[in-house]
Image 1 (cartoon, rainbow, N blue to C red):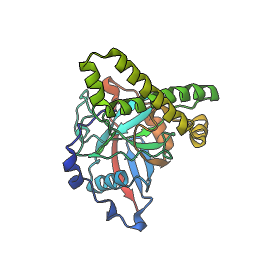
Image 2 (cartoon, helix red, strand yellow; image 1 turned 90 degrees about the vertical axis):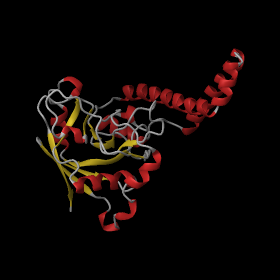
Image 3 (cartoon, rainbow, N blue to C red; image 1 turned 30 degrees about the vertical axis):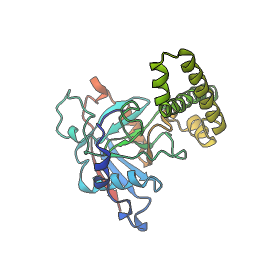
Image 4 (tube, one colour; image 1 turned 135 degrees about the vertical axis):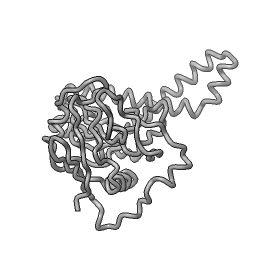
Length: 272
């Protein structure tokens, strides 16, 4: 979900709202997303305070007023939060708009992509290895349900992806050594290093245990969701009311770029 060019890191601190501005009475805040097809109420997690506070700040400023759910994929998710969508004519490509900052990742294992999860869109890993979130764009998960066999197969795939992620991080930490071996055209040395890092990556993933927790297994075999996104994007809330509206939106007809053929607008307000 790559939609926003990252800002310079030194500018981010001035633009992200101070996480202490919410008092204790305001924790576990809820936001109503009034859409063309009906209302959705989301509850924001307290242990992802940067995303919670930023979302509330934008809602209170009216940032999302009149924006669209500009990207909808059936049995996957619905996405919005691009300010450029407010007056976008039919056929206009959307998904690159947002404020001039990103948010540091707040990816926590207890918050995963079950159906109804509220998460932040972001640039892909190649341009955004720290997995920083878009300053405004978000998505709500729909996904699908999995049987036990499908989940076992998926878990194997997730484990392989985790190994690849760990291997990439290890390789990055050995960049100077790799460059030196390449300059020397030392193929044997490169092969030995690759095998060593691969073994270390596998050991780290195996030591971490199962790729899916019991809570994830329960959710994905009953409620449904998108488990392949777990650990990749920040989940900072969930739908408390209006999951039927999410279902209706994810079923609408779409055109090029996964944009709904008929605009689905939203107005967001904080639930007091």
